[in-house]
Length: 165
Image 1 (cartoon, one colour):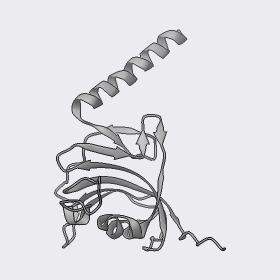
Image 2 (cartoon, one colour; image 1 turned 120 degrees about the vertical axis):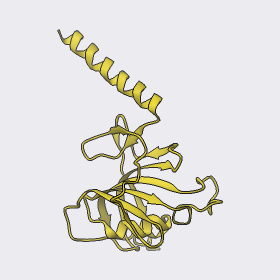
Image 3 (cartoon, one colour; image 1 turned 45 degrees about the vertical axis):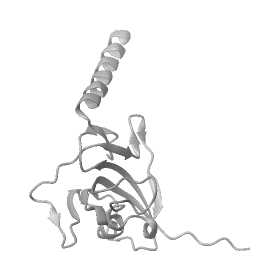
Image 4 (tube, one colour; image 1 turned 90 degrees about the vertical axis):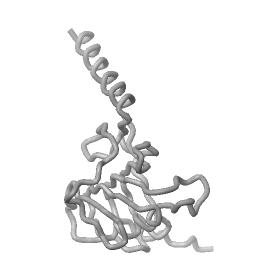
């Protein structure tokens, strides 16, 4: 019985991976683990700011504090090119490995969006090329053009203190 259950579970997992590979889906950040999804399509009810940044809140945060540019933030994220090509994610089928970044070192779209979020908040984010890495990119080996993110803010961390010598 256990062998049959294990085989059925493995078959379902492999089927999900095969479906994901054929549909272009990618792992997306999720507090309940990894979900497989395709690029988030910008809905009509997304909020669009004057500079072109567009976002949709998927889950409200639990706190009232918001990060400032000098903070470091910990987040799960997934990113796609505007054509739907998956680039990377902090979540893999084995689980999520949240990333911590100094907010003032991130792309302009993150520097604008993250301070509007509170811990626990999850958003889909559509960035113009100017709010992403640019077109051509301002940094080598970075994608050109608009980008789409799914971001889950997990923690707001104080800035790192310089080492005392």
